[in-house]
Length: 212
Ligand code: FES
Image 1: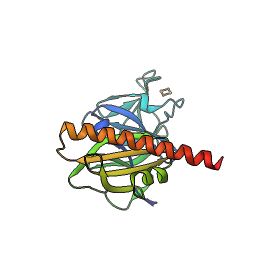
Image 2 (image 1 turned 120 degrees about the horizontal axis):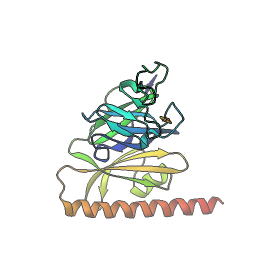
Image 3 (image 1 turned 60 degrees about the horizontal axis):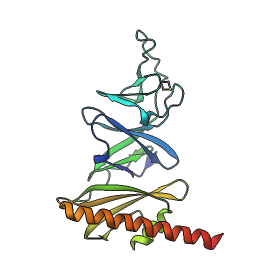
């Protein structure tokens, strides 16, 4: 199956040896980075009893579940069951794995095989992700654009806004700032992003009231 890349997180938010929750459409993801820096996006459900793997811990190149410590290695394969250390876990115990790649400081994920590499935005790098209680279309309009990739100006500088639709009329805004922007610019950009969030959420609320 060929599919498109979806922006799901910023690289800076997932440092080495850490895991965080993410989303691909309706699917909950555990996005994690191994100690050596390899990024991965897996189903956020431990095959043992369904605990969230994004709450787990990373040791070396392995993500382990916080509940009973089952450890999963490359390709989602279970490689260790602490209660049975002598056992080689059956091949069938495997976490569903999604495509994951990084470009311009953004973690992109896909279900299936994307046609090429994820998009690059030269001169920009991932700055901040915000979760916004407004549909993607409302957020794009509040920004003064349309679609899921908007290049424009926000507050003090040029930005790239990647809008990720999430379930339940929610979206994520993954904001890319100019490379090398100074702290004062980034502080002002943060404030502008929060103002944009308030505007989009107010517009979404108003639209809901009008259709109620
Ligand atoms: S639920 Fe994950 S190890 Fe038991």
